[in-house]
Length: 391
Image (cartoon, rainbow, N blue to C red; front, side, top):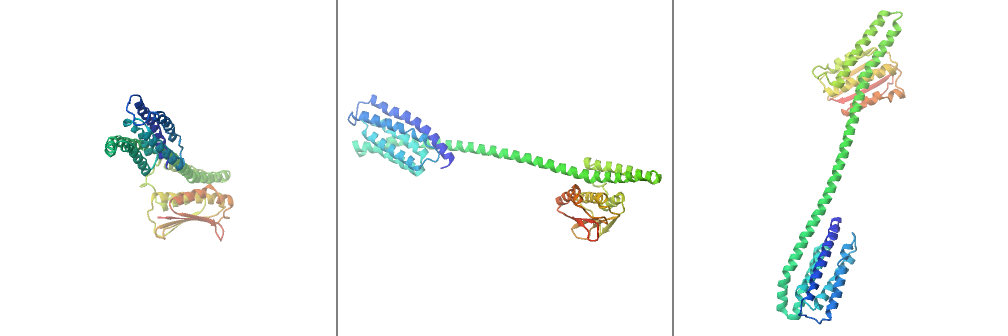
């Protein structure tokens, strides 16, 4: 039995208790104005005593808890049916008194399965009309069946409608609770999604700052350090370094504007080979650019990711590799894939450099595009960073 059924059972028992009180009082009230007794008057107190027990037991279903043993419920209806049979046959009055069986008939519809409820109602109906057949014969029993049929039919129909209404209300309440729980879960998921989107955006901004502005600041620092070293003895070269640093500062400002404000459109963005060529010129150390295969137009997102990866790779070479020269390879030969490789002739990677934010940033960019990143020391010395993306 489900929780809804148990709740409906308890609610139905309240209805049955009310019916017990009103019908029992109405039925026994007939003793005070009926003169025709069908049994000896000694049966009046007996019937009243049985009625008191019947009324007291009528409150028991309201005390049934969820999971009550079936045997207890079955015993309750057996006792009630026995009491009703005794009262109906021993009662000195007839007629309206037979309606005293209706509360138990109604209650059985709430508490029992349909076939058992039908058995209880059928038995009580036979008891009600059987007493007439016993006293007055077959014709009286038939007439009593016609008279009581309407009362039984109304009671059963009203009980079924009430039970369905109670079950529907319970289901509606259960559905409301489930919907509220689902809404709360959706709100929690929405909040998690918003937090995830915020985190991703923060990571994207962090990558833009690190790969873009960080690259330019590193090169600017290199030029200014060179100018500081040359200013005493070779002022012209120092001045050139300062001018180059100033130009790179302007380029950095433009890069920040593009990243934050998206001021440069796809039509005005240079191709990836052109952007990489400019990057190698500004890198602050001898860098060669090598193209393999026929260059083709790439989606803007892939070009941007490869350009930022090249920026970060060259920044790492300049800061950590101790290299004299480096090479950037852009390979279009594999169909459906593009490879970017950055190599140097330095001393290779150490633990700190290989685990830094730069390589993490590159991996994040490339893995979002479905690509892969490999890196490590070269057998002949130096370091190699290789990036492959589908395009």
